[in-house]
Image (cartoon, rainbow, N blue to C red; front, side, top):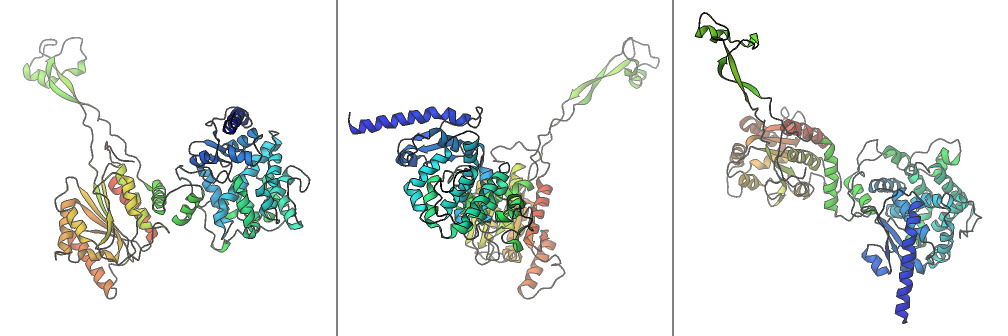
Amino acid sequence: MTRADTVSSANTALIDRWRAAWPQAIETWSKYTRLRDARLCESRLEAAKEGLSGSFAMIRLADQSVVVDLETVRTLGLADYAVEILAHEIGHHVLAPGSATDQFRLLARIRRALPTLEQHAPLVANLYTDLFINDRLQRQADLRMADIYRLLAKSAAGTTATRQAGVWTLYLRIYENLWKLDKGSLGSQGCDERLDADGWLGARLIRVYAGEWMNGAGKFASLLLPYLVNDIEARDAMQYLHDTRDAADGCNPYGAQEIEQDEIDGAVHPVHDRRISGLDEPETEPIGSPAAPSKGQMREPFEYGEILKAAGIKLSDHEIAMRYYRERALPHLVPFPTKLLPASPEPQLEGLEPWEIGDPLDEIDWLQTVMQCPRPIPGLTTVRRMYGQEPGVIGHHTPVDLDMYVDSSGSMPNPQVQTSYLALAGAIIALSALRAGATVQVTLWSGKNQFIHTPGFVRDEDEILRVLTGFYGGATCFPIHRMRDTFREPRKRPTHILMISDDGITTMFDKDEKGASGWDISAAALAAGGAGGTMALNLPEDWEHGQGNGWMQQAYADLKRAKREQNWEIHAVSKFEALVEFARAFSRRHYAGLSTQAKGGTL
């Protein structure tokens, strides 16, 4: 037998042993646990094809999978710990984080407690959830989790990390406290008095928050923060343990938008938590407390994107912004339309027939009976009306299509970095229109030659959101030719024109590249659309009574003329935040309560 055959035979035997350990690992949590069988990879190359690198195991929340690199497992001397390692990975699915949403929430809490070191939040989150999982497996399932850490401490990674008393040493000291092991028995050498106290606090935190692990995350990160600052070697060494690095890859990013109150309050050192320390001290304000956000506040798109990337979501900034505004718009959309049922059938008079003795007396039509014979003879000259059923008519409403123009000049925020209420309002209105069965065309503009638009009137929400979340940030000059070309011919369906901008919208009344008046183009567009036009503009509420200076004076005059001569509905919002309420009211007015059987939309 050649050496290659021997290696292949050993690999096959190892895979068989680990595959046989899977049912036992499942039962350490519950025999009713349902997960895909573990993906056991013979080599690092095979593991890399599964997306595993750096660590010897990983989980995927998208398909509830466990992947193990058996080559690295052998290198670290962990080949005999199949049940322990597999049960640990299962614990990430069952206990913590358990779902992509909880992974997002966990990372948000840890990032808040790691100012300037937010990039290490994924590793800290992994270490934190490992503590809960390993503590349960060691004490309740009687697995050899402590032995695994002894081996890791003796490996090259552990030896490198323990050259100085840092994160790795603190982490091992926490386990020693949790499992009542002798100091240094897991490899926590060089543990000074301060680190020893922090190890005790870390163990207390795991015990106190065992049933509500999410609430202790910020405190754990605050405990590790001073050790992370200088301990670069330990951070690199512990990558072997990082099995949730890309756990949420492929998952739908939902649940990371809102800043929760316990996230704000939880970013404190555990020594200031009375439940952990037992000290009767006043509560310490969370990090950054002077500017701490209030309950219910939403994250900015940039922070939202950083959380998704930390969880393993592989999307561009533009794609993340699309997800951000879609999720923020959902609570404000009009309800899904209901199908109108046929009206109740109406009785239809079809003629007369003889009334005979024995028929109900009240069915006699006396007028017709007397007209036929002045002296009625029951059963001979008496008649009654004969009715048929006229089927009801199914109600039908034609939704108004929408042609939307959104300002993206230098006075507007970049939707991919900070909240753009123009993009949010546009998303609320456009998605509501899709729900009602309408088609939508969106044009994002800054200058005459700085614009993007959907490929005509569409029912594809991704196309719409891709345009809404773009950004130019240039000079302000409305692309008049876009509106001119859209309404060159009358629309087959009524179409409403919507402008979201500020006083710069008055550039739409300038002349186009052919010398045609913008006023004439605007009037023609409104006539061809046949459903009116609305402007939502960032203006003072009393703009109609204000005189302004220079440019503003002319802008106010143009807007008054547009309202007076062309019946543009102008809604002034003094703050961009008010665009959300405008969007809700606009959507309810134009799209709420419509019946639709339209197909092809994504909503």
